[in-house]
Image (cartoon, rainbow, N blue to C red; front, side, top):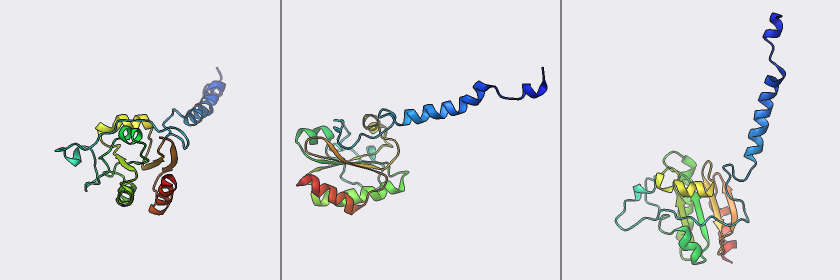
Length: 173
């Protein structure tokens, strides 16, 4: 056998790389492949952990200061037709998540009687089922959900107070 031919990759070997890349790209565009629910779709009715009387805040959240965003469940808010702002993030290892948590707390102080504010700490094991149901990949994520349980706004990454405030006002009209 010719030694030059022995070291050359075959036709199938040359196709393997591009085919693998094409397969991954096609998977990443599928809704089931780690993608957050889309605006206009129904929010998953999940059963997020809620802080119980006598329970330690640190058992369900990695934020270093209690944030009051673990007091209402999705199912309760949806059942009572309350709009929801949900924030997914793990402040223990995500600096933008700490900022996001503070922004959401500020909005909660203004609108807590009109809507539910929920933080899902995706670092905590107790909340992993919710993270899977929402197909969360990366952080932070914020979604604003209307009274009928329809996702109206989705914000991947860091959201600011003014844009969230505008979205909330639109939902509450």
